Image (cartoon, rainbow, N blue to C red):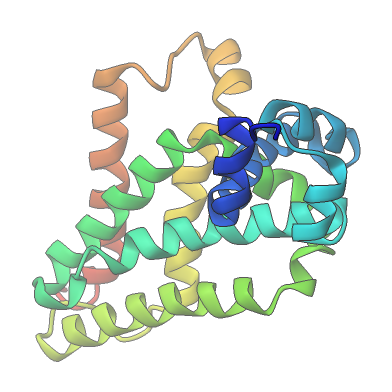
Length: 218
């Protein structure tokens, strides 16, 4: 009787771990080379699986790419839910959300690259995912609830749109990562340098809070 290799037996008995390993490596592959340049063969080799197994789990290369996108958005939305903003005063909740978004984008450059790549494709793959749409409704709802609490306490102006505010926060945090090399080269500034990082984190929080409170305190 031929013994089954330990690695193969472990993989056979833990399909969820296998899927997560594939998604982790696929995230690196697609964020580095895009959907067109990413190679399923390379993902299979690095995860010690096979193209057949990858297609079994995800259907196709495009299916794997979409699963990577969904996992990336699921991660940031779960992180936001764990902040428990409903238990914080409105201004503190807003600053906490901004800080979380700022840190997430800095620590997850693969997410920034994946979103940039999907924009190149006009979000054609994202449109196929009902999950991503539902996930991103949650952050708008969270911001809306914070704004409403701030308005009830006469802290926040009444005309701030939750989606606009989400875009404002995302734009600054995203830009620092997506353009760090071009911006850094042009202006000879390392955006990840600790002092600059801390200053920018305070700056975006101060700017957003000033924006939402301006009329209320006028």
